[in-house]
Length: 174
Image (cartoon, rainbow, N blue to C red; front, side, top):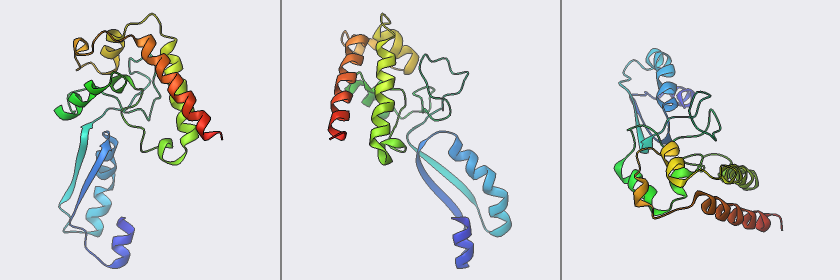
């Protein structure tokens, strides 16, 4: 983007960036700031606006039973919009998914790979039996109240997801 602006002879004054993501978005702009200022002396800075929240990314130190480090956006911390947190109560599957969003990766470009990935996750959740839904919810999305989910069985939820995803996989294999 910076090269394209320079090539056109235009002046870059600021950047307003909207994202569903984590702190890496800010780091990218901070890394580029010196270059931008050198090429665009009237540059005032960048603003990153997070839709739904600013989600941390799983690392090897993240205390989760199941995670994909470096890519999984987690429902942790206090930088989530109240509306996003409230939306997690719509379905008990939402807050215990491995990643907060999948839309930016394989789901959009490689649906078969995405389905395999999510199937593998739910099979791993199924293997956590006899872990309770409330305990797993506390690990995956600690700001939510498990009492607002009425008697959810983690085993039944995971088994239902496995069955649903296997049906979707069958659709793609035809």
